[in-house]
Structures are given as structure tokens and as C-alpha cells.
Image (cartoon, rainbow, N blue to C red):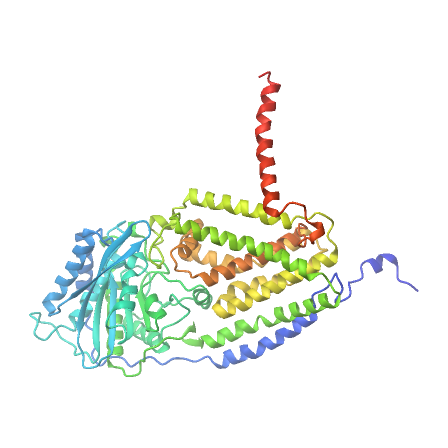
Length: 628
């Protein structure tokens, strides 16, 4: 006996049919393979051992450092790179070290700062020579943006640098202070351009004669804030300082302050690996394989300059941070275990997971998506679905997005975007939030013209069948798989931004008959990865709605290289095709007999001309109606 009609209508579609082309069973089963890399990652967790504490207790004088920071902030409140205040601050730093027998040298260079042009800068270097050829760098930037006195950022770090150098005074100096004999060469580096993206640190890491001898770098930044001691270890590349260095910092901070050092969460570390970025000066050193980190009391973004005066300096915090820094320097100088080189680690409290294990897990999480896509492609081939027009449709969308990227690059060459060194601009600078309306509107207009040309081959001119829609999904998802593999080839950590789209959009072919809001929700879930990156800049760095512009600025100055930008454009083309399919606006690339007699350029020009003539005709008809 046949079932009632109403029950037959509600029967679930057969697996592999046009209604259920993606195999959920295969997708779920492949997730079992992800368990093995996760097990390997779990067994790779280790706890690094800190270096031994120095034999002599630290003697850092927090009161003297606080007085020095106040003096620098009041004497030279405007220390912008290239200004007279910056030159005065450099001379002040040399004068403070002179009583201890240090002969400072100035390393003068120039750099392009967005919004200011080419500026002359100088690093000031003092060296306490040791018997070993290895060198340890202790550094702090002395400049600011000129928006405030910069007492905490970074007169406090500069003052701490002077106070640390005091303990390594030359024996022949006139200053009557206890002296530590260094086992390694200690370099006290006062950088310029630190507030403008670490220009001085970049110059030292690439051009200094000491760069091949440096085994560790300790950067001191904003040590007199209200927050607890914090370690910043993000870099310009997905790399981390050695675990021994980080664990030693944590041990010395705990000993001297009684509080555990603050570190970014595991998610924030993954974000920083997926999109390498930092506003602190350890970044250029880590990118070149030199272990480096920053000790600070600030967050991911240095403190607000307008509120950074000497009255707000926390003398107690500065003293404790200085004691921890001096103890750390003693541990590094007396140890033979710290080797030059960097890797990548995710810190989970006091334990670490090696970067290769994290990458293995991320890559394994591609397998369910790849298995489902390959199975979908095989089903389409068995059904002899027309895949070639679907791939050509994606090619047209990809061509449009590559054209848009080319427009951005050409406008940059013409000077439409702020130009500068390939360092991140300061979030408080004018260029960070100064949306250039004319170039943006001009670029948007050119992109619109390009879209009018591209859409001539993408407009639905007839009813699109289910098989053609499924072919469109298959082509887009195969392109998405290729994008994922390109992400693996460029930076496997960046999969954290791509995985949501992979595991959400794979179900869009099975949801074709569902309500529009269901498809919209799934499509939006796939945008969680890019939204996570925007959140990172908008909230963590306090950029708010200026975050998209700041990211474009990073591309314009060359801090973000071309390969990840091209991968992003390919991902946008996939998103555009899937959006057209979900909205019912998709059309496969037309065959020769389906194309209009005019080409896409002529057809787009005709449409624009007709639109202009229509708008011009309206006022004339209005005047006639009024008796004109």
C-alpha cells in the first residue's frame, strides 16, 4: 500500500541527489582524522624552564628613574621624529650616560613617514663591552607623536634604559656606583621613530654592525602605567621568541612584583600569527630570527598620548618593572643556554604548544571540507553537469576583483594613498583615521565601471536549471578549496580566518530549497573569519570604524605583502559567486550563441550612455510640462 501523499511529500531527499549533493556522512567521518593531529599536539605540550636568577640582586632605583622620566617629558614634550625636540632628547640621553663613562654614538638615517614625508632620524647607542662576541640589546624608543608629553610612552622606558646602564658603568667613570662586569656585550639602544611603527628598531635590525651578534633583545616600553607587567611578543612574521626567554621574563617578573606576567590569550596569539602585526619594537627583530620581546604595562596599543603626562606616572610600577628588567638582563648575561633563533609557539599559561603542532591541527581541519568538495565534484562529473560555464563565471568575478586590486595599486602609484616606510602607522596619527574621500570615491567609480563590464556575462538571461546551479556551487567550492591550499602555502596560521567560510559554505548546495533567511545566516557565518580580524583591529587596537581604512593603509605602505592580498581577492570572488547563487541571481557564463552581438565593453558603454541620456531627458520633459 502506497504511503499517503502528504507523507511522501515530506520524505527526505536521497543522498547524492540534486537536493542533497554534499555528503554529510563523508564530511562527519573525515572529522575523525582530525583527532590524530590533535592528539599529537596534546602530547607536544611542554613547560619551558626559565634561566637561573642572577647571583647579585637587582639595584634598580625606581625613584631616580621616575625623576628622569619626568625631566625628559617636561624638557622635551614634543619629540616627534625629525623635530628639534627629538634632537634635544637624543642629546639629553647622551648627557645622562656621560657620568657613567659611556661614549655614545649616533646612527643617523632617514625614513618616509606617512603624512610627513622623508624625515631624518637617529638611534643613539651605548656599549658595555664584554669578553664574549655575543651581544644583548636593551632598548627603548625616546620619541613620541607630539600629541602629549609622552611621560609613560616612552620617557619611562628611556629613563629605565639609563638606570639599567648605570649598573654597567665604566670603572674609570666619575660616578660612584656599583658596577656589574658583563659576560656578553651589552648594547643600550635608544631608538628614534618607535612611535611611527618601530623605524629605529627596523633600521638597527637590518643595518647595524651588531645585528649578527645579537642573541636577545629586551624592549622597554611604557613601564609606568596602571596595568600589570605584560609581555608583548607578536612579530612581523609568524614567529615567537625562544621559550626560555619568555619563561625567564615571567619568572623574574613574579619574583620582583609578586604578580604573574600578563600574556595574550591563545586566540589572540593565533590571530597575531595569522595576521602578523605589532605596534611594539620587538617585531622587526623577531622577523629576522633574533629573540626579542617587549616588557610593558600597556596593552596591545600604547597609552593615549593626550593623557600621558608626568603626573600620571606610577612610580611603584616603574620601580618594579625596572627591577624585573635588571634581573632578566642578569639572567641572560650569565647564561650559556640562550641560543640565537626564533620559532613559533602558542603559550597556554606556563606551558607551550609548538607551532608545527598547531599548524598540523589547522591543516587537518581542512580535510572534511576537501573530502566533501572532491566528492561533490565527482558527483557532478558523473551526472555530466556543465562545469565549464560555472568556472568561467567564477573567472569573470575573479577578474573583476583582480581589476579592483590593480586600481588600488595604480592609485597608490599616483599618490592617492599615504606613502611611507613599510611599517605600521601609529593609530593616533592623522593618516590612521584620515579617510581620503576623493581617492576612495574615484576608486569606487572605476570599480563600478569595471563591474558594469564584467556583469554583462553574468546577468541571468533565462531560467537557470537546478543542474546549472549545482555546477555553479561546485565551481565556487572548488575555487575555495584552492584558496585554502594557497593560504597553507603562504601562512598556515591564516587558516583561522578561512576555516569558518569553508565549513559553513560547504552546506549552501544542500540549502538551496530552504528559506532565504537560512541561506543568509549560513553565508554570514562564513564571514566570521574576516570579522575576527576586523574585531582585532577595531577593539584590541581601539581603531573602531577606522579599522578597514587602517588595514588598507597597511597594504598601501607595503607592510602587508602582495600574496595574501591576491589570496583575499580570490576568496572575495568565491564569496561573490556563492552570494549570487544564494540570492537567485547566478547565471553560468553564456555560450557563444547566447551572447549578445556586442561585446561586454560595448554593451556596458551602451547601458551607461542610455542611463545618462535618460537622466538628461527628464529635466527637458519637466520644463515642457511647466510650459518652458
